[in-house]
Image (cartoon, rainbow, N blue to C red):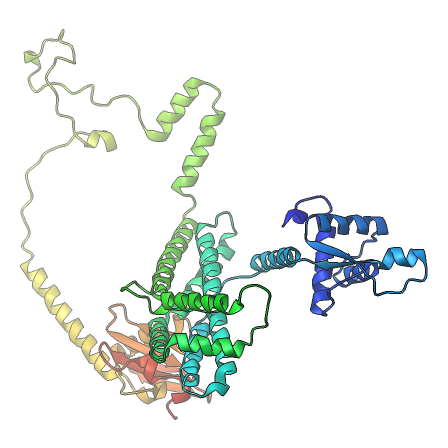
Length: 509
């Protein structure tokens, strides 16, 4: 079926099939020689094609069963030349239509990029809710049931295909080598932020879709498919009734929907597997980023050192040079313990071989420093009880100061930064740390930034103000002037800052 893509003049064969595809979009089912030439110009074929060459291309496509040829008996021909040019009419066969669709799909896959779109999950839930409502309406809603069901299947197919494509691109990104390090780092950092944004509320969206599937199944999916079949108004065809195949296709699509969100027999939904894949990808990307940053901080790496050493070995002129290079690289020189002797040398005759002589204790320091161990009197153990008590008291004071600072900074709801007014320097330092963490976080689509302290006990949500005012914070060490952000600071176990603070709920100034 795809032989035309690998033979000589494959570009001409592909352009001719594209010409038939353009004609089909204009509801022209058959083309003569002149019409084919005209459509070739429409698809961008600028090279001149002789009649004999075009006839040969069409003959090959007919031979490969991609194009069908018939005689046009409905025309009136005035000359023999006109008969030769207009007598034969060409049209795509089913194999030709399939081959053209396959090539177009392959080009689309090569040009497309995968995506993780939360909007698709919300669209799936909306279509399921719409099906639930339509299932209770009279027969006049059958056409709407059909169109809604097809939209649902389209959204599910988009979710599956985009997820597969994105996962493939993600794995290739993890394996990518040889790219520019700066561009490589930026792409990986942006991908981590993209994955983190997708994971926000992913569990809630998946549970919403699963609940919608369960509600639709309570009304009966078989009845819903039968009504969608009536709304589809399938045309009559020769042979078997297409209704059975259509219903079977709908059942298979519904089974795929259940596999993603509400599988049977306690199997994990695929949406949860996608959650795990995204989290593992974030960890892997961060590890790669750390290695890249580490390699950029160092002038060289162990891998580069060994590769350079291998090049030196391959360029060594003689075997003696190889031995000297090995000794210089790995420090495997002559033995440094040959001068050691038995504690009582008179007990061991000088004529006794080393294999039969009793062993001699060798210090481990010889390998690293070339010196033997020297044993001296053990130092007196220092009394650290006072130091321990002082450290414990200082730790308690720091914990009390930290708890007091969090009590001062914790808010009952979203407030303006200017509402803090005058602060103690220690409390002000904690507030600055929270603001710095929030401003370093990646904002969501509404501009909201969220961050937590290192121990995860305090969370801050920050949103830019809409009026552009400035806040003035005073401490014993000076005055800070900056944007009057809307902030919500909560401790662990309190009301979630992300739910209480949103662009539509900013605190009034």
